[in-house]
Length: 274
Image 1 (tube, rainbow, N blue to C red):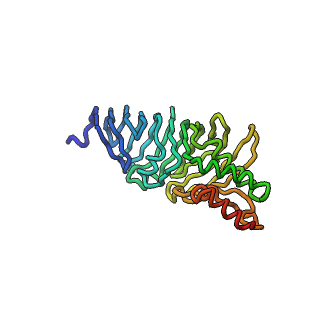
Image 2 (image 1 turned 45 degrees about the vertical axis):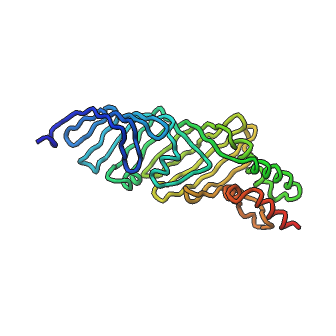
Image 3 (image 1 turned 120 degrees about the vertical axis):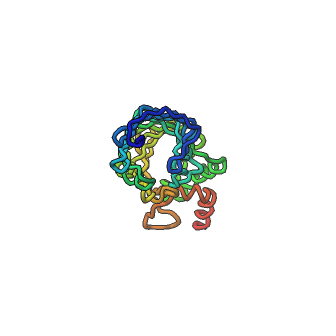
């Protein structure tokens, strides 16, 4: 009976949807034997990029999969959005890997996320959208430091982000370790011609939260660190500083400053010191 017999297929499909992720113009060379599906080659277009992989799926073991391959120019924004994990509007990230290996169980989307493990060496690009109003506000914030020394760390971080990464193509490079749905990295370099920073973080795909820190460098020397934590869709980026007259050095959320507007922060500071 044919379902239990070995077979081999060459398949072309204009569109495949796998747990919400759309793959276009795919070409698949696949064989089946003894409850094991073997992908001799599986390649296609994923978002704005491409991928090619090889691997096996064991149907007799909860659809256990082990995949090796490579991908180029894959939009992290689109993947996170399609998996209903996060929506990033101002930051665009595209990733490339010439060699990756992942494994897990593909019974459903939750089982994939909970079991996903592997190692991925990545490179790629990032682009942060900023406005002229924000640049003006950052410059004004620097001037206010002389009057309000307590905002020095916030001013440094805001100016660094805007002047280094605002509307400037930026490169990313590092290694991602994946273990049962948690993605971590000891060091991801984020740099361009204007400066660099380093990301050390852990991302929990199940609980959809992130925990880590961003280290800012100036002339190859560490001059500031920011804590990164919270919901992946709206994480906090915290800098220590005595803001709004707070004598307890309460951390200030840099991401919130950008969302509410730097001018709003400046207005509050000026009102406090009237």
